[in-house]
Picture 1 (cartoon, one colour):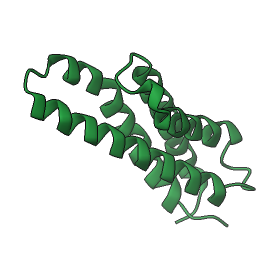
Picture 2 (cartoon, helix red, strand yellow; picture 1 turned 180 degrees about the horizontal axis):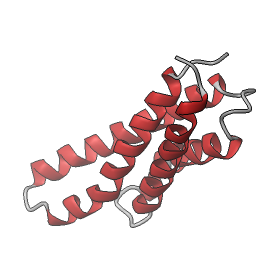
Picture 3 (cartoon, one colour; picture 1 turned 30 degrees about the horizontal axis):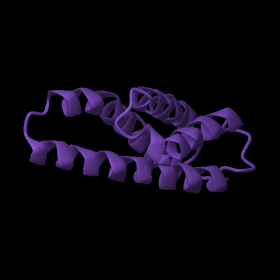
Picture 4 (tube, helix red, strand yellow; picture 1 turned 90 degrees about the vertical axis):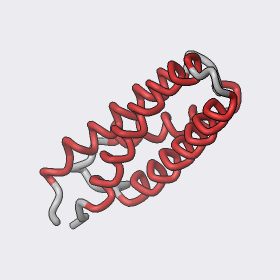
Length: 117
């Protein structure tokens, strides 16, 4: 039996990281200070890398578990992969990565009740 550990981590990282990635283009657009824009850019890249790492670990951990839908892990991994493609940096497609991350995190959150502690 698989534990809830990676499902909880994936839900937390997916939802909070997705919210941050959805809001960050607006913050980058509003930022009048170059230093603030650099800090936000670094945080965005770190968030993408974290989502990618957690998505891979969770997909491997729950690979053959029927209680976690394959589509949940695929959407979350897709968010991590798209986020790491440098073409999407500073583009409106960052919203799509954020939404995919939120949906993947919400999918893992819905699977938590089916897993044991």
